[in-house]
Length: 88
Image (cartoon, rainbow, N blue to C red; front, side):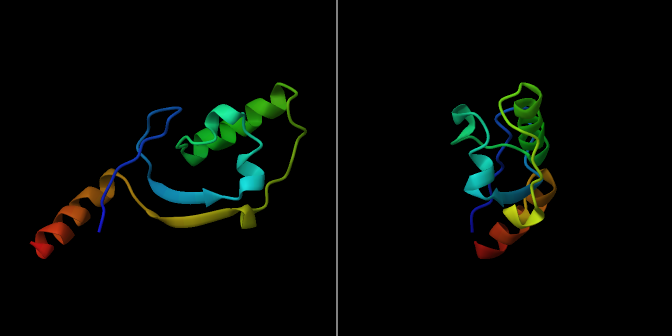
């Protein structure tokens, strides 16, 4: 079991949940963000910036392009500690 805490490469906020976005949607962002970690708020803000800057036409992103993978972050650190202590 691995308990890690990733933070958003845009705002620095610790991730609260793990998610996946279809490559067809992720690739709408500038190439700089390709291998970065983003919170959902920053992902949506960056997509909106692309639209406002005229780099992207307004789009509708359907929920089937997003996949919830689990809860992570500070609120899970106590759970991770308990689980890892039980393994020792």
